[in-house]
Length: 148
Image 1 (cartoon, rainbow, N blue to C red):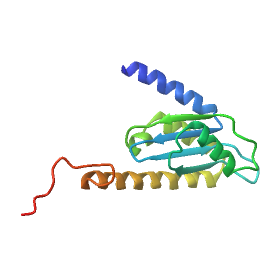
Image 2 (image 1 turned 45 degrees about the horizontal axis):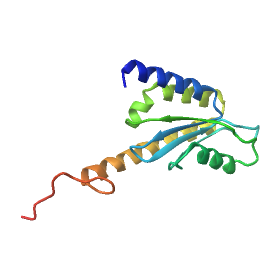
Image 3 (image 1 turned 60 degrees about the vertical axis):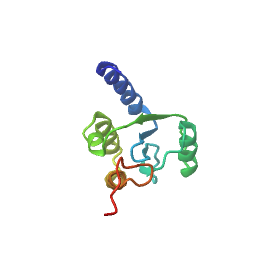
Image 4 (image 1 turned 45 degrees about the vertical axis):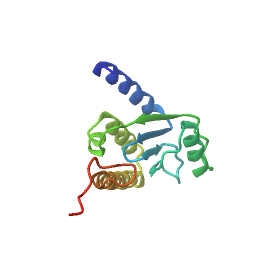
């Protein structure tokens, strides 16, 4: 895919995420998702969570709605796949948009959840890197230690 096509598609994804009630950033390298649910009431602010992928946008939407049944149902979500590092996500326009939306929510709890989620994602990334180096889990080394 040409860089200009990627940039166009990313701009479109961010534009959709700007108005979506729920934004899900899928991080396949660490098998996790960052989920921002912007729905809120006076006593229930927006939330930021980290969870395993659920396989489809419909499943994610059902999960979000079941987790907060007292709020009006979310009917759509924006999904943004992120195939790079957590730091590159933080340095991206995707994170800028998410952080702006979280900040504009005015919820200090949501900001704290965002910070905690970022640390959790970094920990998952460190664990994945260790597994990769050791050839554990889904990773395999191309050589093995000799027993001598």
